[in-house]
Amino acid sequence: MLTLLIPGPKEAGNNIDVYLQPLIDDLKLLWDQGEKMYDAYSQTYFNLRAMIFCTISDFPGYGNLSVYTIKGAKACPIYEDATIDLHLKNCKKNVYMGHPTFLPLTHPYRKRKNDFDGTIETRVARFPLTEKEVFERVKDIDVVLGKLYKKPTPNSIWKKRSVFWDLPYWEHFKVIDPLTLDKLQADIIVTLCEFEMYFLHSFFGIMVHLVTHLVREIKICGPLYVRQMYPFERFLCILKAYVRNRRHPEANIVGGYSVEETIEFCTDYLASTDPIGILRSRHEGRLDGQGTVGHKMITSGAEMLDRAHLFVLQHMTEVNPYLQEHILEIGRKNPSKGAKWIEWLAYGPNMPLSSFQGYDVNGYSFYTQHQDNKSTVQNSGISVEAFSTEFERGNSIASRDVKKSYYGVIEEIWEIDYKDFKVALFKCKWFDIHHGVRVDKSGFTLVDFNRFGHEDDPFILATQVKQVFYIRDPADVRWSIVLQGKRRIIGVDNVEDEEEYNQFDENPLSRLAYKPHL
Image 1 (cartoon, rainbow, N blue to C red):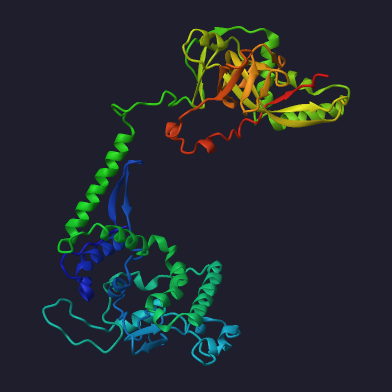
Image 2: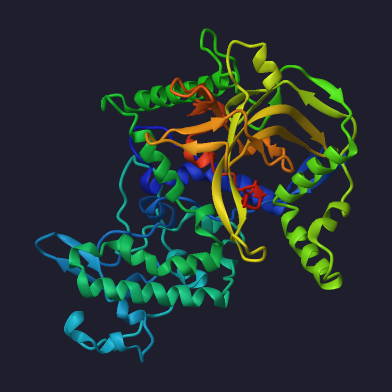
């Protein structure tokens, strides 16, 4: 893209050819002889040839470049003297309607005279001017450029012969006519006709009429966004907003744009630096989980490791579809066998395991119960919402899933290594949901530290739990009151909505199965 900037307090007008002449000379040279250029990639010289593809300007600039009179009754450069216009005396302006002439002769809009100008439309829009027809109209117009004196020009809507006609290929451009654009053109004409039914006449300026020619321009030159003024005009609107003193608009634009660029640079630069004097959350970079204290490598028993591995398989979203498929397949092939065969279908994790006494995840800091005994704070309490399968009393077949809250304390923290990723598990002691957890009359949840249960399901994913605290009940020392933990993660690792962050879509709720005590 080549930009032409013409200095001065006034526009060049029809004398723009004076400024374009050096460009035309260079374009002729590039077309006829070319220019010797060096290709750094292939390290060879080649002859560069170039041609002008299209011009980008607003409509007044289009008039200067095409040397067509874009004001008055015949302001459309495509249809010239066939332009249908109407002069409004009170508004003192010309409007351009008559869009039903572009419709097919059988279109029903042509007969709806009451919705238009009161007559049945029988006229047909003529074909647009070709490049040869335009050249015939301007080739004999002789105009002396410059503003030293004025020379009378012929009474014609074409003011002069544009300097672009000096290019040897200008009059030989061909039109590409993809059929896929014809439907768009028909829709545009129908829309403009509907506008004429309801809008006032003063709405239909030349810019509205020119919409009828957009499809034609696309066929000739390709997409509008690469050659139209619309992006530039939108940016000019931004630049005009910088003007505070109309006496010096250019200085205001330069100053305002420079200030904005400086602010953007400083913002981008400061975003990559560490703030001084501002406390940083300890959970920054740890929301996904990270061990903190007491790291060591351990070797677990085979049975407990298999339990942990099976728990991971049952709670990973990626594994769940295959798990259900294998359960159905095994059920068909081995009606007498249960779904526990799935446990042997996958390889176990790497050994030894990483163990921690402390772990940060989801904005919480968790400790094991052993670490809690050495600390002045309590961080080993957890709660999780899980589905439990309950069987009806006296019926071992009929069951239903119930969503309940389970409470426990962390005994161990494991980080299982699966080569490509790691999974953090809490090995917990769960309070017996049936005998060790109750809700008192005041609505407080209480747990009994002497009643634990669910020993077959000691593991839980670290990302699934919430932190709770246990406070000894002064009315009954055997029970402890459950208090929910708090966290502050807004602004940590770009978290904006805590409720949205709480949606653990990738980790389905765990399932704890038990039969009620009879």
